[in-house]
Picture 1 (spheres, rainbow, N blue to C red):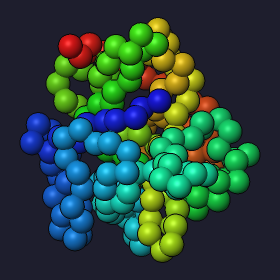
Picture 2 (cartoon, rainbow, N blue to C red):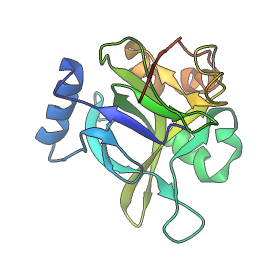
Picture 3 (cartoon, rainbow, N blue to C red):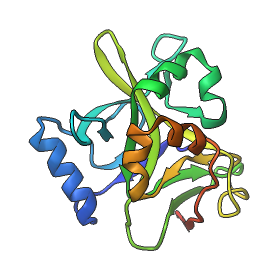
Picture 4 (tube, rainbow, N blue to C red):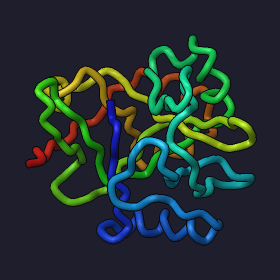
Length: 188
């Protein structure tokens, strides 16, 4: 689920601001189509306000070379691998859309409109050998997604970012929130 997404600072002013903030903070996040294990821009808690950083997308898996790139939001608190990270280190993936493949391997891009609007995906991060690595959350699909895949990203509205990062009660409840409708643009 959500094995790739777009981060297009050249096509979206908000993503451009986020990208510039990461660069100004000394990071070089991947732009364009972002793949698992890429350095990706993330919004995390700062001392007095959120900050933008970049870190590797994916937790180390159980086998050498394996990466776990997402976690089911509804079970995150029961999973030892994710529970503490969710409780202490929540983050947000800023994107301009994500990709999904149907059971017939047809590739689809999902976003809010035909323009590359900003889409925010909830996640968390942890440190492995002193290196921060992130994971995004998935949830049950809504009507716009169910015909394509049985999962979808846990999507935040822009005005929910600070509450997701700083408000534990909000974050706990949001793990089972209903997701907004999306538009699919079939890729050829």
